[in-house]
Amino acid sequence: MESAAPLVAGIELGGTKIVCLLARGPEDIVDRVQLPTEHPADTLPAIERVLDGWRGFDALGIASFGPISIDRHAADYGQITSTPKPHWAGTDVAKRLGSRYGVPTGFHTDVVGAALAEARWGAAAGLADVAYATVGTGIGVGLIAGGKPVDGLTHSEFGHIRPARMPGDDWVGVCPFHGSCLEGLAAGPAIGARTGIKGEDVPADHPVWDAVAHVLGQMCHMLVLTGVPRRIVIGGGVMVGNPHLFPRVRAAMVQSLAGYIALPEIAADAFVVPPSLGNNAGPLGAIVLGAQALAERKTSFTTL
Image (tube, rainbow, N blue to C red; front, side, top):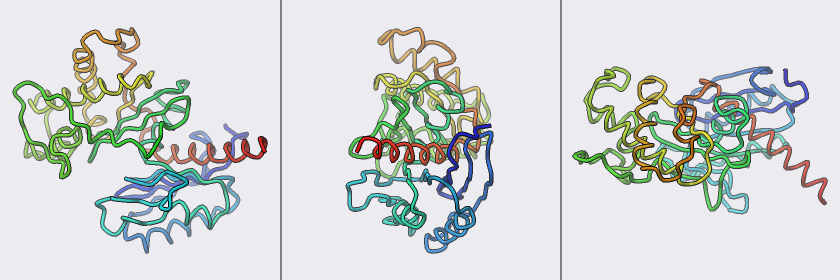
């Protein structure tokens, strides 16, 4: 029981559903409410009705689908920006909710939220330097260094990097922006488009998995070269539904690195692993974001 931890309201804002969590951690969840993601004019008031009933929380964390504006000095901070999701582009989320409740508010991508949660309580517990990748309807990566998200001008969009292709594989990919980027080649819609089979129905011995493992091995190669992760956690429906991919992705990564950065940790089975928090990774990540915002507020007061 994490009784000493702050009580945080966490919001995981997903493309099809929203999870609202009132918790101190995975062992102290006070309430959990799921809502559909509809038009923001309906969805945001629905979230507010849930939070209104939870008055008394110490902080608020929001882990959202993106792209989003995370620069607190930018005019559009707290907004969902160039999303293809109808009606959501330009929607203010963090400023609206943060000002309504007057508590420290953390705001970041859903994949960074999941990275924070897995680093705090899950498959990378005890490690401060972690990469979390989700491979599902899209591909996204959250990088955590020193326990904090790796940010600059904006959050990473790792899923849109173009990988080196497997010899003989010249399939064009499905990303409407970049064609054969990581997401365009290995996310669920790409697998479905390439095989004509729903992702969950593609058998483990289908040749498409060779190409997918190669692409995801390239992703891990690139993550290793950032110098950040001590562990790479890969979740999302494509990976969770196909555990046979993990050894293939590890092998593809090691082969691609070709002995460069020859650290024993990288070759170990424990370097590329599945998540352990299941469907709670995103909402619990929002809890971490809120707790970090609260800690930063307290630190700023003590250093004045």
